[in-house]
View 1 (spheres, rainbow, N blue to C red):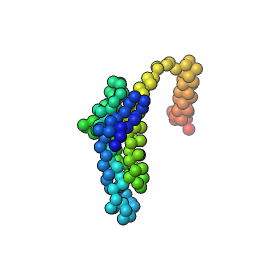
View 2: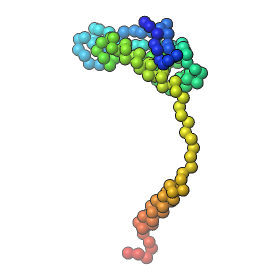
View 3: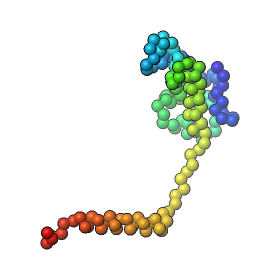
View 4: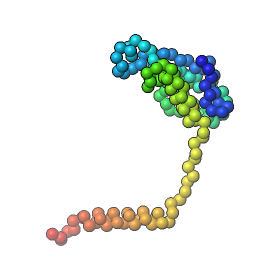
Length: 142
């Protein structure tokens, strides 16, 4: 097994990966019951090389059911019929998961509503209130 290149300067050593072939769930006839074509990939994310502190913090704070309590990331790949394609799929999903945390999220800049949008909002509220007033029954009417 070889190291997984996540991004330029960021990689996961092969020693931090554990791969196991398992039987694939779901339909498939006799072949699915006797051949282990699905892949279970476990990756120790604390072994990532070249990860800055911010990305490491975002990664540890991630809420994902595939992230186990001991810091191991677990992927089960069984989309494809062959072991090789499932192995490649599991690695691609691992890379995509880690890459999400490399770029810090952009912070929202608070802005004030424009005067025109405030005016439109008030006009809509007045129109809605007028509709409700017209629906009310008035004493002394029909």
